[in-house]
Every structure is written in structure tokens, then in C-alpha cells.
Amino acid sequence: MSDPLPLQGVRVLELGNYIAAPTAGRLLADFGAEVIKIERPRTGDELRNWRLYGGTTSMLYRTVNRNKKSVVLDLREPEGREAALRLVARCDIVLENFRPGTLEKWGLGPSELDAANPDVIVCRISAFGQTGPMAHRPGFAAVAEAMGGLRDLVGEPDRPPSRTGVSIGDSIAGLYAAFGAAMALFQREARRGGERPALVQRTIDVALNEAVFSMMESLVPDHLAYGVDRQRVGGRMEGIAPSNAYPCSGGDSVVIAGNGDGIYRRLMEAVGRPDLGADPGLGTNAERWARRDELDDAIGAWTSTLPRDEVLARLEQAAVPAGPIYTAADICADPQFTARNMIQYFDVDTGEAAPRRVGFPGIVPVMGEASLPVRSVGPDLGEHTAEVLAALDIPETTR
Image (tube, rainbow, N blue to C red; front, side, top):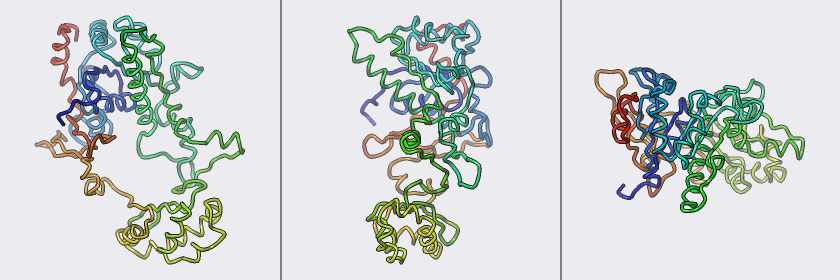
């Protein structure tokens, strides 16, 4: 792509581990920001060892930290702190997700960052935010998902709450952090030549539990307005029917969303149950929800007699929204993902004698017709230390 990326010229210092702040850094890097990731000596970001099946660096780290530069500094030592502050002086944004008080203890709190660079945007991610009675507590996404209201709605109604298969709370917080940083950057640039935004306006405070809670739609308003407490409903969505996962012959499954009134009637025609489609007692979502078991049984009885591809072909002909439940292998083989460059391949070390060709997720959102190219996967530990420090005139002795 010959045109400059939207964030080209923006420099970001990432002081984050795990997933939340690094996800924010990844999003900024994807669209052109130079993201300098600071890692501790010897071990680096703990994510390097998460789901590590071979080699020295996990594919999870390579994915979350793509398009970044890795610089090794010990922030607990005076030399590392000095180097970090000199980097801050040349950066637009600082991202961090340490437990509140940690950066202050190291002499790298917002006041020190502001003194090093009065224009810097400070984006902080923590379990419960920088203020309030729980601010000091540690916490991971699992706790945030529970306290943000998500876990109570995930799983089957007759079983304990479950969790999604990814660290969704961290990823949501990372999205909010990247949005907040970009918003503060826009505000700062809009005021160029005028009054500089105060530090409080340049400080973004993202709490994991609040990020999750913000995604809970009308959970609290429904409770306060109607006394409704949402319940776990498995693969369904409360109040919306029919919408569920249904088994096909051969062991595959599909998701069918037949919950619009017109769509519902077309679905019932497709499954051979026009009687249910014409039933006056099933004309609205509320009525269908009350008879959801009956509808799911009718749909499942049809899907279970046909292979997945045949089910989907018939539903496509009937203009009923449906799709297969994909595995990783399915995603890699899917022509829609391929057409939009959503799987991009790199040679990476997996601990074998030679590098392996590995596909990584493309960049979202798409600008143009397909994903922007991923420039590099997550770097080796300290891969860019000498390059970055030399380019910014930071003496080697401060490493």
C-alpha cells in the first residue's frame, strides 16, 4: 500500500504485559504507529510463554504484538527508568497495564511522564480503574468478566457459569484503550497552537470490569425498569427465537438466525414446517420465545437429516441467515477470509529445524477492499533494542 497509514508518524511506548495494553498497542501499530514495546530482561512479556507448544515464543505473543518493536529495559533500575523517560520525551502515547501504583513506585507515574513530555497521552488499563475503593486490587480478565456481568450469562442454564474461549475482557479493554488514545490524540492535535490539554484530559483510564460491563447492552436498565434478571440460555439469545446452533448429519453444526418475522416464515418453509410459519401464535419474537423448545426441536429434526453444506445451501436459497460453526482449519480454507486477506502468512520459528509457514489474522477494520498487510509478527525479545536507542540518541549505557 503506497498511501501513508492513518497513524504514520505517531510513536507509542508500550509498557504492557499480557493482552490488554498489548492489544491496544497492536491496533495502533496496525494502522501505522511506531509502537516500541518495553520488555524486562531475560524473560520479556509473560505472554511469550502462554500456550507455548514449541520454540521460545508463543504464537499468541506473535499475534498480539505484531507490527511492534521490542526493546529490553529494566524499569526497576535507575538506568532503565532514565532510558524510558527519554523515550517518553519522543513519544505521543504511553500505554500501560500494570497494577495501579506500580509505575509510581518506579518513578514513572503520570506526573513524571508529563514532566518528560507535556504533550504525552497516558493510557492506563487496570482491573478496576485508577480510582475507587477497589483500585488497588489486582485482577485478570476472568475476574473482570465475572464482575462486569458477562460470566453470569454464558453457558447452559442448568450448569455453573462458563467463559468464552478467549480473553475477551482483555481484548475489549484493549479496544477501548486504543479508541481512547486516538480520541485524546485527536483532541491534542485539534488544539495545536492553543491551550494545551491538561494531564487529566490526556490520561485515559480503562478498567477491565467496566469495559466488559459496557458491552452488556440493557442488562442493568432491564433490571431496574422491569425487575428482569437475564438468565443463561446456552446457544440462544434471551427473548429472540428461533436463533441457536443446530446439529447436522456427519457431526457438523450450523447457526441459524431465524428471528425476524419474515425470516421466520421463510425458515419454516425451508424446514418443511409451513404450519409453524403460519401459526398466528408465533407471529412475534415474544410468542416464539415462549415456544422456543418446540421451534428448536422442529429445526433440529430437519438439520440432523442433512449434511452441513446442504443445510446451508437450502437456507441461502430461502434468504435465511445461517452459517457453519468453524474450526481453525475451516477458517483457513474459507474463500471469504482469503478474499479479504484475513489470513496472512509468515515464516516463524516453532522450535523445529526450519521455520514453519504460519497464518496469522489480518488487520481489522478493512480500509479499501481487503485487510492491510501485517508488516511483521511479534518480535524476538530485544530484537530492536540497539536500533531504537541509537535512532533516538539514547546512550547504550542506559540499557
